[in-house]
Length: 146
Image (cartoon, rainbow, N blue to C red; front, side, top):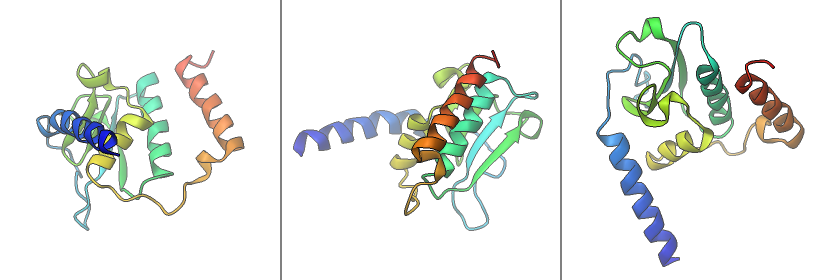
């Protein structure tokens, strides 16, 4: 138990330092209820990384109770695309962390550090049959439809 706590503290400190020092003004970063919004900024037209990030948004929506918005780069002119923010805190961005390519685990770690609420049960994307089809879709996107 003690070693798990130490790892969690170290992980929290290292991830916390990554997010705490990289903030930008994100349109709609907070909803009307004062909750931080998870924002995905996509290029126009979206490429492989943007499409992959949109799939991550779907996975997150199946586990976490957070408002999510997907913005085209033209509505977020001063932000890198692709990128992902929680509130105004940068998670991944083109030319920066992970070069704009997020994953469920990267975003989930950021949400967990912030204490984002989870749904009482996971959505359909985590049922075996649906998950297989979803993973096939993600593979097709990553291969450029080939």
